[in-house]
Length: 487
Image (cartoon, rainbow, N blue to C red; front, side, top):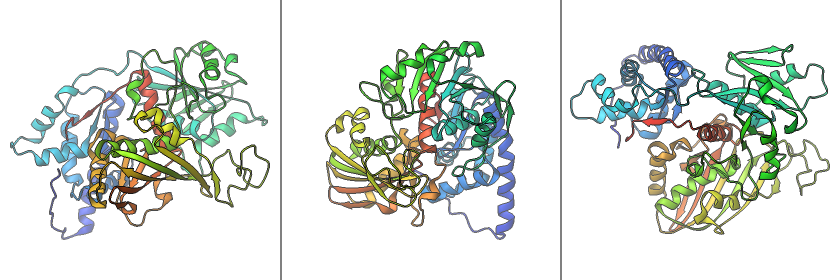
């Protein structure tokens, strides 16, 4: 439940904007200090506010009005943030928007300081999330590898959680290979410029990214690498090459001195656990040495399927993905071992297969044998769509289903995985940089009795990389409590 604020229109819109702009600007150092010194993450209805610009913070407030029909502004959230800053907090995630909304609903007459102190009493003085920083190594530095690197550097916080220590790759033909790798990290045609500074130290083969020293190690195989000689120990290896996808192949990483565990950024084969964070990450144990973060499409559809199962049940269905082209395809027609994938990715829609429908069963065993799937690769470089055509266990209607999904996206444990849009004008490029596994497009929903067709956008690169990092945190034992506990 939310409280709709029927605020009168300001007499001077420009003056009102400037006042809110000033408050948002004042929030930035407060949010930064909380994150840097105490590993406290501040969010606005699931949107991360750490390292965000003034306008990004203001747009996050505007988002609340769009999906909650609630006039939440910086005038309400700023004093709540001030109250948060007065507390001695441990490493937690605090949703400033839902916390403020909860205070606005509270009828006990508490001051903001009293309310915030009560709500965050369990978050005080919680210490560090880990006894010592967890070393992370990225093996392979393609699309996902570079985005995971960006995220790890962004989330370094006070430096006592996950620390990117090294990148392992094969040396290219150019003498200035390190400079070229740094340039690919610094500039991206889809995701824009790196948010920070990158210094290249060719003498030590090191990239200094926002103060993080990241060793670049050249190797042709995992067995060649001794991480301990670089001061790296007990490392989590992120294999983003896709070369090895079963336990036998990925076990090669564990032969390297200093390596402890491996996370594959592709669907795992055989008995390898495929983890969709938010769904079955509870299956991760301290004994697991090798895990898969499944695929981008599996991560996009499983949370929505879980929500449908919980509310309505799913009898059977078909998943069609309209997927951006990838490096696996040819830019122009050329030989390819896969069917149709040899044809120009930039000029054609390419019908291909996807294992995502079958892979769903690894995260949701209840759906085994109930889903079919196919994929169409289209001439866009990023952002895909999954169309779920489902026979539900009971009848419903569009309005009820959309309202349920809106609540799931904003208030449920799946709010890190599912975003929600009710705009009739959005297109794929609007979702570049989305940090959720998928974005539920409520306008496109079709319901007829127990038949439902659901449309889910997903940034198959960045959104998936966020899910990978969440899995990494879980593997390392980093688990942030989220406040307020009950919205």
